[in-house]
Amino acid sequence: MRDRLRVVSAELPPRPDEPGNAPPKRRAVTLSTPPGPATAAAALAEACALFDAVRASNWRWPDPSAVPAVGDAERLAPVGLERLKNQLQSAVMGEKVSPSTWQRMYAPFLARLIAVAGEQQWADAAELLTAVLRQWEPNSRARQMAHDRIRQAWRLAGWPWPSEAALMRGNGKAAADPEGVRPFTDPEIQELRSRLQRSRKLTPADLVAWDLLICFGLRPVELQGLNLLQVDGQLVAQVTRQKRSSKGSSGARQVPAVPPDGWPNDCFELMARWKLHGVPAGMVAARSPGEVLAQQLARLKVSKPLSIGLPAELTPYGLRHGFALRLAQQLGLHVRESAALMGHSPQVHLQTYGRRLDQPGLLAKVRQLQTQS
Image (tube, rainbow, N blue to C red):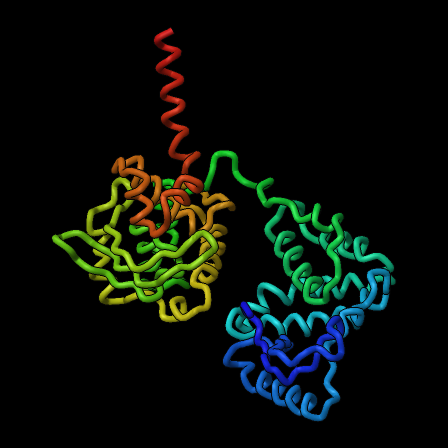
């Protein structure tokens, strides 16, 4: 039954809402153990216990009225919420949520909920949830995550979700840059590369990794399984890492090098350096190569500038954004062609880069109309 396991049998007794003399028929009961290889033994044990109870005629259907009442303050206490957190962990852990995902995407928000619940005695769920969600900035992604994870626990318990808490989720768009994404400019890329070469902590393999992001517009995670080819004298990156999200998925693709203005076509002998140094094994093996690159960039930002500063808002993804703008502004590729090279759909490409791509043309059109008038 979707992501739940059920026991279906004609031996199950009539439900409470059925007459006692109801004819035998196949009925189903949902197990509390979630599906998945890690919980197969627990699910089998629960099914066997259910079988033994039915055979002994002492099994009863779960009582829906056993859920605590809305006004019950005990369920809002840390002990009750800790028990609910453990129930949610048992329900989602398995095929869909790994232990590391639980620690990153669930545990911090539920821990904050339990901590706030322990500050005083809460008689109203709306007051508790409002106080918890105020721990994060309005319209931030963190508040959205907190709202969604805590609501997931509320649904598991069968408790109604207060409208006051729903209004606090926000849409996450308040902090968006009105000009669109923040790309690395060509001078900033050159400054970054100069700092990489001067760094005593980073290796030639680290420089190779950053040059790959610059020249091919890769997502940091696509350094995993990457291969570099020479096709008709042109550098081509063969991406094998697949990305899946709610917006779609991207498969393997080949991306030709499009270096910044002023760079040599061989991207400073990138193929030879790739064969000699490769990319850092620790970075590729990390759960998130982007986090490793972000830590390196944070240290590079505070190092002594050689020509210009590196703004605080720049991220490793800014190199991918710069690549996307080079495809459109320097090569003049169509949105569909650019999206194919970057491994996403034209719709996502327009949503991400539309403001940056449209603004120069709009300004030029206004100047032309003003001149004509």
